[in-house]
Image (tube, one colour):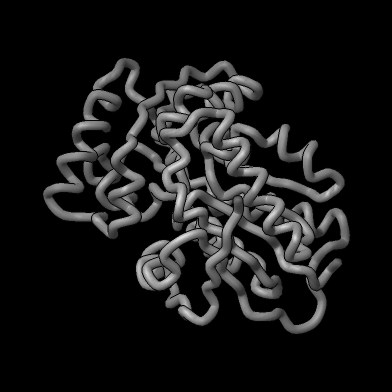
Length: 268
């Protein structure tokens, strides 16, 4: 299993920010990425629907012989215990717990602010994860327009700034003022510049991608699962619009995506 690929899935392209961090941290590994682009976004769906979609995506990856699964979607990570049970003994890692740990490393006593999709906010996943480690105060804000903005490449300019101010200014006006802001959706890092401009340089931004990559590296090392030999080319699976995924995905991945490496699949 050492040379088997690592599977990553998200509702769309946002999880490519996690894959980017993983590829940089683990250059010897091969990755298979699945973006459920036909059913994007997950953040507005019910918990039951998201759990069903996530299980279908995970099974599509296990059918490709992956050695572990990374849930690169905060909304789907709410169902991490369910997926761990369903996929056992295959290791499964989500992004919420690493993000909570990173936020507390910056501000152990808070206050901590979290921006995320409606589903993640309603589920209270970050509040639960943070309060499992500390009773630091947590304020949440759903930012539903951020995902479609990111998927459209609308990551700067007056429209993006107006939307960011609409969501973030009331959050930053709360007292006591947050010391750290968790980007609780893997789509949000591509909006990091506009978010930082709105909240101000004194607020630390936490992106769970790098800390998730560290958690995966630790798991591989502890279980003797690291790849050996030369890595194979990465592969991408999507449920709709593979050409668009290859074109726009570069914004998230940070590198060109070969259209020939993108395969359309049906999860239903």
